[in-house]
Image 1 (cartoon, rainbow, N blue to C red):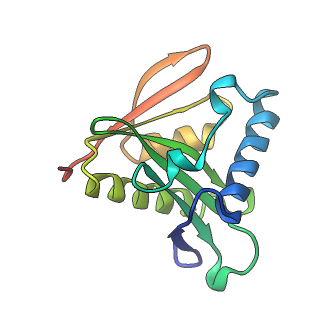
Image 2 (cartoon, one colour):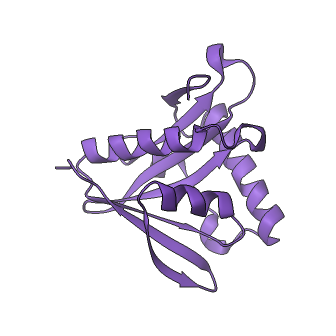
Length: 155
């Protein structure tokens, strides 16, 4: 997508905080609550060397972010994707794909061999994105769906 720029921003700054607040508000809107496991995200999870948080902005940083996504290491060789969010007005334009491609490239560069994430059936846009970009659905239960992606070129 050519009408956004991506950059890694410290988790405690305005860009990531805006993205996370919007993502969490949308989760509450879609599900009626924020699951207990979704609380407590911290800068220590997403700032180097543990992780990174990408923010998508319009050219010349005009206005608030249009999207973002976080990566954090959770175990040896395993990363977790958290809080992928794209502004509803920007959906369908490749912002989510661009964010995920940047995250996957960086994860492989860091030597991670696989990534995991969780989502739910009330997020069909996210499910469609993950399935279209090579993620494997590994589990479905009352709490949602879990996906995994094996990375090539890691190590």
